[in-house]
Amino acid sequence: MKMKPIVALVSILFSVTNVHAAPVSFNDAWRTVLDSSDALAAERANIDRTQYMQDAASDLSLPKITMSANYTRLDKPVEIKPSDLAASTPAGSQMGPIGAAILPIADDLFTSQLTKRDVFTSSIRAIWPIFTGGRIDAAQDIARSQKDEAKYMLAMKQQAKFEDLSKFYFGVVLTEHVLQTRKEVEQGLKKHLDHAKKLEQQGQIAKVERLQAEASYDKARVERQKAERDFEISQVALTKLLKLSSPAALSTGLFTNESLPPMSAFIEKTLNEYPGLHILDSKKKQASGVIDIEKGKYYPEVYLYGNYSLHEDDTLAAKTAPDWAVGVGVNIALFDNSGRSGKVKAARSTVDQVSYLRRQAEQDLSVLVEKTYREAQQALEEFNSLKSSIALAQENVRLRDKAFSQGLSTSLEVVDAEMYLAGVKTQRLAAAYQYVISLSRLLAVSGEMNSFNQYQQYKGLEVKS
Image (cartoon, rainbow, N blue to C red; front, side, top):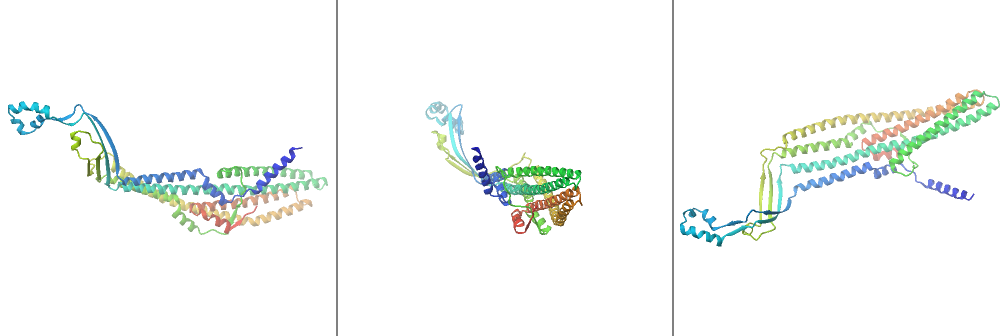
């Protein structure tokens, strides 16, 4: 007995929590996807990577400065003796007996040591390229194109996520409407079954008519349960996409528009804005950059260089050597084994390949836009045409139910009328769903995702079950 107040309190708190839970609009869901999608986060990280690579490529124009240190062990010190100097001159070859006798003594007294056996050197060296045949500029252009490609990849991924969200979000809306329709059918057939039981008790209808009503009601209950499962499954998919802990109430319903902009406007916008085409343009620029790099290998490299000694040994050679040196250097490849000629041809083939792919992509996009546009129009026409069918089906249900109560109609006819009405409602909801999905795909491929709200709020006609 003491547990009842606690259970009641928990139920009240749960109800209050649900009441105050803010419904999620489609725009809210889209912002959530943009902020929480791991796939989009991966593409943003790729943009950061390409930015770092572009920064690295910009450093190619800077000088390269290195500090080096060397330790060398000689087999013996490097020395200069008077006898070595005498032998290196023509006068030394004409030296008399007295000079020859003096030289050994002079070698002992005046031998000069140029270096010791242990030699240690250290220096700072700088090399600054001033002409590389355009290879540095080409490498920097390739890095910029790779960054542009990464940005377009993110935009392309966002378009795909927008379409996924449209399918999942409005899939929940559709299954919720279908569930409501199935509940209405179940309620109608339950009412019909109760009516049939009373008429059977009064002897106005046969037992088979009551059994027919009961079987139809059981089938309607099964269909309602199936609709509940479909609704729950669609909720799970959307909840996982939005990374929510529990399913959220949705505030944006299915809608239609009176008309669509001309198809040519969507095609033109798509061919100008579709990120996939810009990705191919970036690929083409990168291939052209490879051509410039390989062509640059045919030109000489010109560079400035400088060297500054940091350490000086206490030797004659070290004291006489200069502390610094600067100059200009040139490298000319007389024979290059990197296959530059073949790489130039391969890069040109890549440029041709990308050009063909772009033309094919333009054709495919035009077909996709036209197909999607016509699907949207067909769905819109189907939705509008079924309006009169719903009115007819509702009137038929009313008349059949009234006729059954008067013994002028069978239970099967009442059930058929109820099922026909449910079928027309479901078909009309499916047409509205197909229209919204086709519209979202049109707006995605044309880069007009931000205008979806205008079609829904300012020009949209709400669809009710």
